[in-house]
Image (tube, rainbow, N blue to C red; front, side):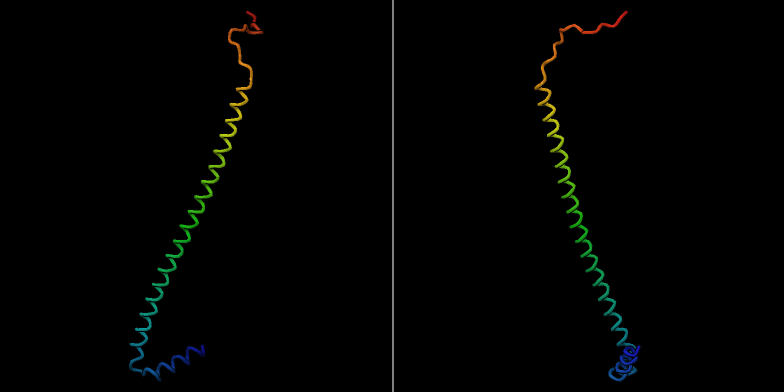
Length: 101
């Protein structure tokens, strides 16, 4: 509070009571403009951070998908190898169990 009073007294002495309202309006204008510029800058930085995070998530998602696809391709390859190593079934062989009529 002391600093505000001291600043007001110095402003009245330095600027004068007649010009003080105009000086305060001008200071308010520039402070508002700086705040708007700061908000725009902050929004831009936030946007860039979000985009970088989204790209990182997409990269991780893609890597996870690649791992899953590789795993299933390996499982399919192993299943084909196992089925190829089994002896072939003879379709002409009679069934071992006949249902009773």
